Amino acid sequence: MVRTALWAIALAAAFGQTVGPPGLESIGVAGMKADLAFLTSAPLGGRRATDMGGRAAAEWIASEFVRHGLTPASSGGWFQRVPLIEYDVDLERTIGVLKHGKATRTFAYHDDFSTEGPTDADVDRPLLWAGYGITAPEYGYDDYANVDARGKIVIVMQHEPDETNPKSVFNGRGNTWHADNRVKIVNAQRHGAVGVLLVPEPNRKHPSSLDRRIRMANGVDRKPERAGSLTLDDDDVLIPMMMLRDSMLREILAAAGRNPQELQRAIDSRTRPMSLDLPGLSFRMRLVMRSLRRGPGFNVAALLSGSDPVLRDETVIVSAHFDHTGTPDGRMRPGADDNASGTAGMLAIARAFASATTRPRRSVLFLAFDAEEYPTLGSTYYVNHPLRPLATTRAVLNMDMIGRNETMFRYLEGYIEVDPDTSNQLNLVGTINCPGCRELIERENAAVGLSLSDKWNHEHILNVYDRSDHFPFWTRGIPAIWFFTGFHPDYHEPADTMEKINWIKMEKVTKLVYRSAWAIANASEPPSFTPKPGGAR
Image 1: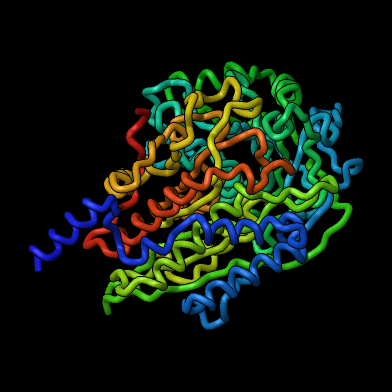
Image 2 (image 1 turned 90 degrees about the vertical axis):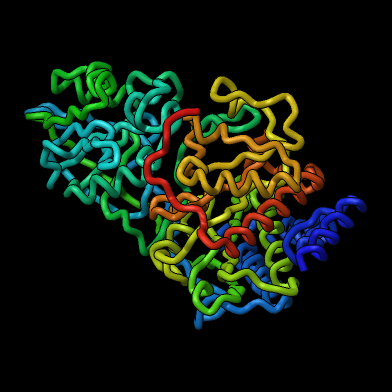
């Protein structure tokens, strides 16, 4: 038996074939081209969540699962209904008011702050400076350790302490999941806060999150107005949030006799919290919605049951989001790379598993997420309402933008280095929390030949590490890797069309994900999650 297997490997090598898991040969460019042609077609209108085009894409994905003999992941069928709210902020009546004794100062939407969330709110409470708003026992750090946030509005800086220091315990010059804005809001809520004012770090050497949001591709600056935004109807964020500009933060802290640069410097110099009440100051957050519309999105889920009677209860997830941004200005965004490419790759992998003559020991769940663009709403809903237990979910391999070459343009300038030739390069995001995943993927890549980069794990400006559907799983301690070929000037633009796809590269990425998923699903011991990254590389 061993001699036969060795002979087969030698024969395959002699004819230039790649030895791999059964079903690998079914993955090819022709099928993925056909899938992209449908997903980017005009009738689907850019596949915006809650629109008819998005629903049509979900129905088509389910039909492909049926066609290839997969089974629904739950007794409820192929679809997991994701309750969404579309909302428009009333730009005139949404205000912030700083109160200092009898003096008041009113701040205006867009000029001074932005907001997200569909709930009318009118909260007027004392202010608390809560540093970075982080509770991280694995680093011995807690901004709420010596203050009482109950019933207060907390001011929280974005990002993490000492992030320009390569020796920072918070992943060196990279970030950890504690830097995520949603994580900060949920943490404030857990400590009893009734509102959050998110502020840029005063001493940062990069634009704020608010500035980044209006600095888009092709030199176009877009106002951060949240017209037609989406959020979860069943959300775990229950308190209002405002994202402030630098000038607003300076005014608030000046009223308390505090200097924002000094406050940040005091924390960063020792990686030690310096939270404090701001006596005599209170703040009113008035959020008014102009309109609300409820409508469902749909995750699509299919299951391939494992062959082992015990291990089949464990799950490996292969995922991609199928939604895009629709026609926000009357021009359709086809989203060929973002993320028809990942969806086509996920479907090719599902077909490969279904066509294989044998099955791996663990079960494989194929998840097509909705509403990733708003962001990560479908995957966030899934981790809150999993179809398979999270405790026995061993890994998530997520494909988002796997079809283009990363290219330097305005969105990236000054933030990160891009290699001159990325035609064979693939970024792996999330491996800092799963070194075993990185090792396994590198082993499988020996037969594929891509150039692997983990640069996005070690940058702190664009926060790429939390910008796809792997991230909600990451916060639950599940190894989750994002396969990502990088940004380009057509990102979120009408010009993201299938004619620009690097098909050879996309096929190689898809085969690498398939090989990696099979290896994890069949491993005696799958890779494990590491809560505390080992710092910068």
